[in-house]
Length: 193
Image 1 (cartoon, rainbow, N blue to C red):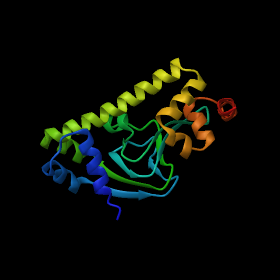
Image 2: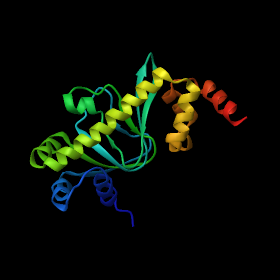
Image 3: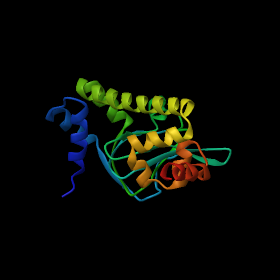
């Protein structure tokens, strides 16, 4: 039987030394949500009031530039997600996060999370570790976009995150890699010839 709390607990324990006390502090603050494919978890222009832990499914973060939709990140089960700048600064989110597939998440609101951080040093450490993961991922992605060719970015993605290639349609994957779908098709063809 599927138990989302076990998935959350396992993910937390992989990152920090938490005991039952910390987990029991967190449980009453969790809100379990299930979203249909394409439903928005976060809407651009609204203040993000929660952080979310993906139990099952995939999310896509995107924004619009010159009326063109730009996909800039995908998250998979075991990930903590949020429009984090909006969450921290209490300002409108610059991007949306959608359920790319049917999605199951646990969410914690801003007020409860700040209270938990004040009550538990270990939960505060866990929050910092999740934030550091987000920062490292974002920094590496920016570096790759500036220093690698489109082919190199695609090959790196294949090697490090094959789930992207398996689960994401070409137009979104191309947007993520900052190439046109036609260019990505040519890259794929050249690598398989």
